[in-house]
Image (tube, rainbow, N blue to C red; front, side, top):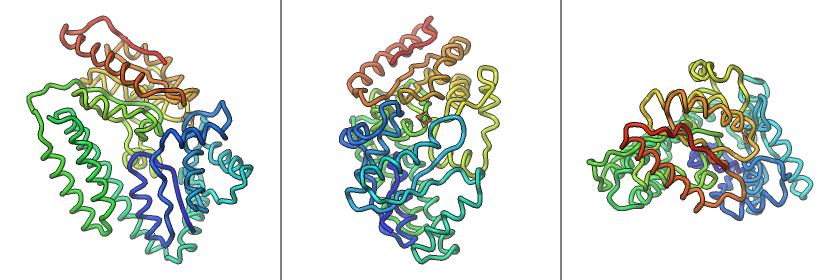
Amino acid sequence: MKISFPHMGTSHIAFKHLIEHLGHEVVPPPAPTSRTLDLGVKYAPEFACVPLKMLLGTYLEVLEKGADTIITSGGVGPCRAGLYPHLHQKILKDLGYDCKIIIFDPPLHNLKDFFSKINYIIKKGGKSWRQFWKEFKTSWLKLCVLDDVEILSHQVRPYELKKGSTTKVFKECLHIVDQAQTREEILDAKRICEKKLKEVPQDPSRNPLKIGIIGEIYVVLEPFMNMDVEITLEEMGVITHRSIYLTQWSRQNIIVNTEGSIYKTAYPYLKKKIGGHGINSIGETILYARNGFDGVIQVAPFTCIPEIVAKSILPEVSKDLNIPVLSLTIDEQTAKAGVQTRLEAFVDLLEQKRLHGGLNYARVSGH
Ligand code: SF4
């Protein structure tokens, strides 16, 4: 099979490894661009949230490059994520594409369905379950290393002496991890990347602000979607902490749901699951406040119901815990320059707050 999948942050590197080692050809998903979004907007329903549009654009791009199968995640619960892969399938069929979409819902939702789909991919590639487990473990290690290297880049960038130097090294690191094939090579790649990132010339005397990033998983993880919010802030000299990494999210949500503590944390403000990452956005804001962060930025797709609900509760959390929250709503009209201006204003506000020991800015929000 010629397989492709969504582009979400750096995860495509690990997925490519797994699919290739299962005996299939991979059509790597290109990093999203405005062309990708334009394609999605052209054929998606207007009411759909922006991740559906961007993923549709990605699928059209990989189908143009010859993919015949797309592997994607589904969803269960009160949001549209579970509907989207089926909608994608229908739109692509109407456009004349005869491709197969394999949808993976969380395994605990339907174990039999989950494993029968894996079995299909294994058998089509001529591999055994034993080989699958071996390659799965290696790919998981690669995914963990990608997250670890990225986390380190976020710690280094606010201190870099030359703007852009960390990003340059980080891109080299992605290539190094991509090239590594065995477990030993992947662990070596991790050591090399950590060394390279730590060697980026830095000014340790800085005292950066700390901002937590919360919101819907796709816009949080895909830099093109969130207008490079982390890099932009870090190049302003701010430390960012992202609430979601795929390895951490997967461990909590896909294999075993251990999110009890986040739900418990959010409970005084939100007592029910509302789908997507809505409840997480509340719980994580509380945790950021408790952990001494200076502010929180919520990135939310336009019309995303879970994040709209969270946004309506965040002012109360912000006021109670004295932590400013900026909500950025992302749609196809959002421009990077506009986001940059709002980030600069927010950072300015946080600096004033720190300088004067707390201003009466309980919340900053907007669209
Ligand atoms: S979480 Fe929000 S953006 Fe994601 S599918 Fe659900 S409604 Fe859409």
